[in-house]
Image 1 (cartoon, rainbow, N blue to C red):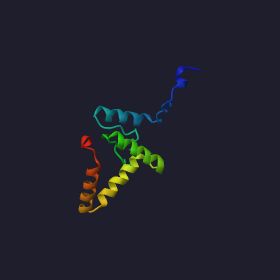
Image 2: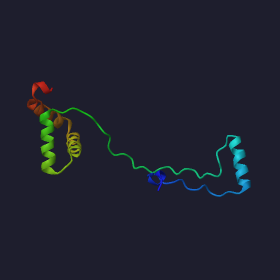
Image 3: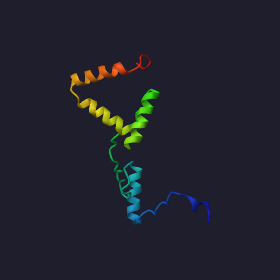
Image 4: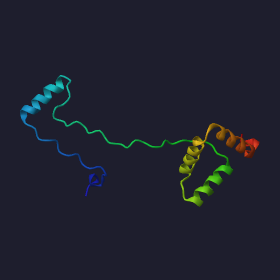
Length: 113
């Protein structure tokens, strides 16, 4: 066994067999700067659109502990809980949002503001 047997990547497949005429025609295309007619166009990779983006933000130790406890007790991922809370807040009317913010402002310690 050689080291090449240990490679993870598969070996490249043999190029397709072409006639001499096709080879010469493709060489002329190459010389003229045209794309090869022998190579199959690469299929675009189908990637699912990303639903979420990574975000970094700061939380107080108390908020992190509360979020951890909530995630553990409900079995819901922390990021999903945050998305749910944001969705809930955005569904409130503007006066309801203001009222909630005022209630939460009273609970926030001055050093965390």
